[in-house]
Amino acid sequence: MASGTSETNGDLLEKSDQIRRQPSETTEPVPAPATNPAATPSEPSPTTTPAPSPTLREVFPGVRVDIASKLVELDGMVPIDVHNPKSPRVYLEVIACTYDSKEHESLVVTRTKPSQVHAAMLMIGLEPGAPGSWQVDEQLRVTSVPPRGSPVRVTLVFNPASPDAKEVDPAELVINAKTKARASSLEGAGFVFGGSRIVEWQGRSFYDADGTGTLIGLATFGSETIAWREVFSPEAAIAEPVWIADNERVPAANTPVTVRLRPVLEK
View 1 (cartoon, helix red, strand yellow):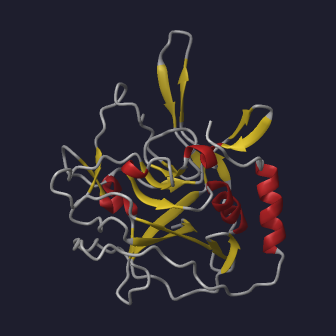
View 2 (tube, rainbow, N blue to C red):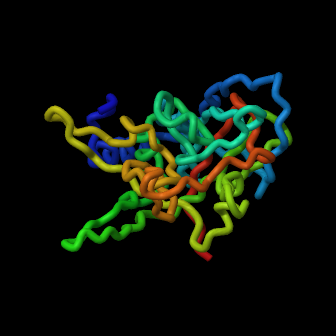
């Protein structure tokens, strides 16, 4: 198993409570990775414009929180190159991952620890549940178990330093390879705060997503901190991969990204 953290859910909750009680202060944003000047991608389709800059505090390395506005931010960059004519089709299994994990199949890669994002989400009142999974009955029939937890609104801001930066729903950037339908068009599309899981390894407890790198899932690995509502297997032998990056909307590799996480507002 990859190295992780020995923090339990109780430790994360205690940390988030301690930070929430501290006086508010403003911190400078973490510098974003450099862009790739050689590439000229198409602009992603915006869903909204970024909200006015709130008062953010860096509560963990690379994790910023505005408790009053119920906002969590973290930085990353685009790891895939959908503009390479030799390999334009990029299948996706996660929306955001950590380095040395699933960068070849993710829209965003970040240096932020998933366990610390978990703690930050507790600070803004989100409740973890569990990632999706499968159950096998006595007749060896397999049924899927959907993820549960507080609904989470996930948005991406590409080139956040630009005055023209827009917030984009990542599901708008994911399309079905056969039908070209967007993931956002699925009934019940969206994300929930699955909360990963605590696993034991050599007598120690670890937050699983810190080892697997699955911060924001698309396929169901069972370790993701934030889970896509639809349950589907990442194993090609079980389910044929269908979700690919939209080449016309995903920016160039190395484009800086700010990931924003908020509770889903009740209608």
